[in-house]
Length: 260
Image (cartoon, rainbow, N blue to C red; front, side, top):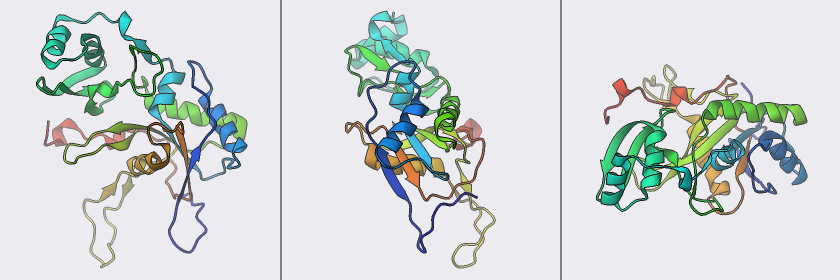
């Protein structure tokens, strides 16, 4: 168990990493993050966890697509016409999905299961924080691999390989408001399993498993936000279980999903 927390009381610290330029295709994100942390006076240390927003990962991996290059299918055109949406965008959503979970043409809502297994609106495709018109951003092809690569890039320049969480903003089925979730994980177990342990009153817990990676992604959003140009957060003082890491344990199997 890694634990950099030295206080007598439980606490963690979240630090925004500033000073990163506009990310371009092919950029070495790990090196850029490590150098930015050093330059702002918060160099990375053993035990740190980094939460990296999906948008800069996708930009570094060339996952921006011009809608002018997309030819919509008949289905995409028909859906887009009824929903008052761009048929090129609908076509990309369909291409990036392995199944459609819900459709509401009256409101233009399209919930899909992505190729990665994430259930979200529009296959995670959006146009926020993209400077060019008619250009959209897709999710990384393999976010877990992206997280591993960033950690390795940091190792090469800083001598440590911190756990990496790649975060994105999803809606929730039962509540209003959006929350950041982990879509890529490397270097830590994304879950903390309390099953078989005692609660404060000595009762044995039977079902409680905490999605630590998701909670850290949500915590990081408080300082990365959407429009303040702080795309990375450093989490310090958070105990974690070292592990190869993956988002796979966070995805509920369809056979256990009561809502699909």
